[in-house]
Amino acid sequence: MAQIVLTRPLGQSMRLGELLSQQLPELKQIQLPLLSIVPNESPQDAKRLKELLPSIDLAVFVSPNAIECTMRLLGADWPKTVALGVVGGGSVEALERRAITPENGYKIYYPKLPENWDSEGLWAELQKVRTDWAKQHILFLKGSGGRAWLAEQLLHSGAQIHHLETYRRVPLSKDAPVWQTLKNTEAKDSACLITSSEGLRHLADVLKDSQPWGQEWLNLALMICSHPRIAQTAEELGFKKVECCNAGDNQLVLASERWIQQLK
Image 1 (cartoon, rainbow, N blue to C red):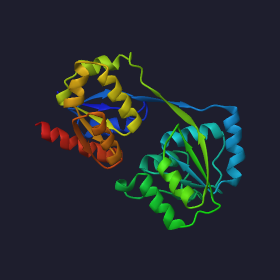
Image 2: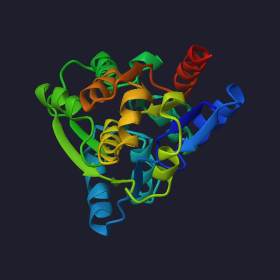
Image 3: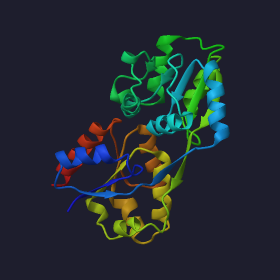
């Protein structure tokens, strides 16, 4: 029996899992949350965020996690005076759940096409707004690391860059029972949906420490990656079967359908 491994944090794979169940009901799903999201609840950082916002021209949320955790830290409505930048459809949906939309008076920049849902795509959108970002104050709301390339582009354009970590990512324990599930699953009949380079590195570390079955997963399981950079990372980490698709849940489902057809 073929199985698909969902590697996002628990709760974030829900919509993707539902789509897979609708389109590929015969496919067994394994939840392998490679990273857990821990919100920043520091009163000092909450105070800093509230003090920063009046001087910020653009806030860049690096992910849906950043949106949820920032709003939790802020504890208030997002000010309509501060424009927002996000990289993809998942973040747009996260904003919509909080009624942060253009229709409600918010200015939001994001790449419209799924194939452009990355830092480069958002940078292209921002360049349509202005080519000179001198003296503009840009706030990156993120976990540790994230969107360093985009921050560099804005910095080179003269912007003043601020960073605030609104959450941290915790790797799945190597003692978690789900690793035993992976061990007892046929790697050659499995595909992993990968949307995070950091999570992918953790997966590779665990597999390399789990011989001999871990090597089978490195050699035989398909890594379906949602961005070329993630696919490149997979190859560098030693995964032998790697495919790339566009970002977004619908694209991951389509890639899964293509994989199932190849297995038949």
